[in-house]
Length: 450
Image (cartoon, rainbow, N blue to C red; front, side, top):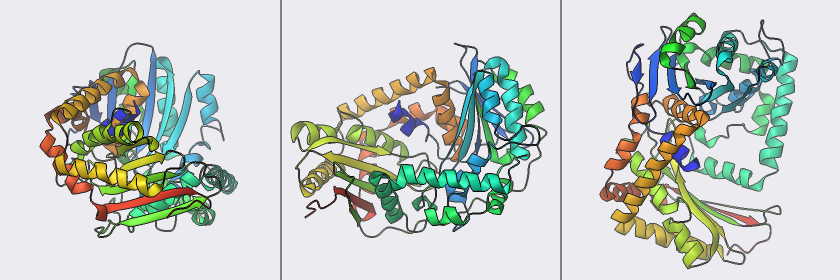
């Protein structure tokens, strides 16, 4: 399922199409869509197996949209969205959901921020009213802000500062992106989290939280015909607002390979990694994105992949090895290769073995048998995804937040089926180039890295 989400959520490169309120039915997942008069896009994926729904609102804003020097403010606002409104008391949002037998949560990425509830079908109207309320009437105090800032700082300490792997990932991203804000962690740099203010958080809320900058996705025991009057009555009256253009600093061409080496006493097992700058589905001028998804599956998508078979099974120099492609970003993204070496194996030997496999991939390409097997597996995962309401909602939420359309997502399996081995070889040669890479060695403290 994780492999599917890495693939299918990214399915689309075009800007959101001009459907202007009409209901449009999909193909692979059976999604229906319409747009409210205030610009709020709505996607409905019916699943009538149980009388429950997954309701989520996605804002097309995230950490990469923060003002310079204000890293972490998008994530801070996500925390503050649970503080209350003039209608819902402080800290009562999640408690109300829980009392009605549901659960809720939220998440922030570089490109979007999402809020969701899993609830019984007959409580859907209630959660829609609550979510619409905090879209326009969020209330939090200076004390609330300071409390949540401390919570976020503790979150950073526990999840990042106490984890060499997380710190290393931050450093690799910062080395990969010299200008683009994808090089800044979503949670923020500690010194900037500390300097953020109440006014920063409230200004970000007012600038980005509006219906014409939001997407409503509902999956479960409901149809678009049933949801539309509810959405029009509850979300429809919220006025659209003027939005600033979503402009970000763009990454300059990478002309030289970069390396990061880090050692830490908490590292028990060394790790080797390499990331390459790569086009996303949204930013894909040469039409390589779908091919990169399939390429990642063939090269490093599990125990039958080329890299795993070569390093773990045949050469026995690694305990794990793989690759993945994160295509569901608004701007330029990355293609990753990673290895966990076996104890006592020299890192230089591991790197040479990986480079030999990459050379085979960019030289001879993939076989027709490999391509057919990858296509079959990825299409099967798309079918299995229909069983999970939350996974379906996330597929559409991520894709549409990054500029795709419902049709882009629905037609993804068809695009996979149409790929040729020559297209995969072309994508490999275009992306897997040393001068586009950052190679990382994460080592135990005092390890011999020669």
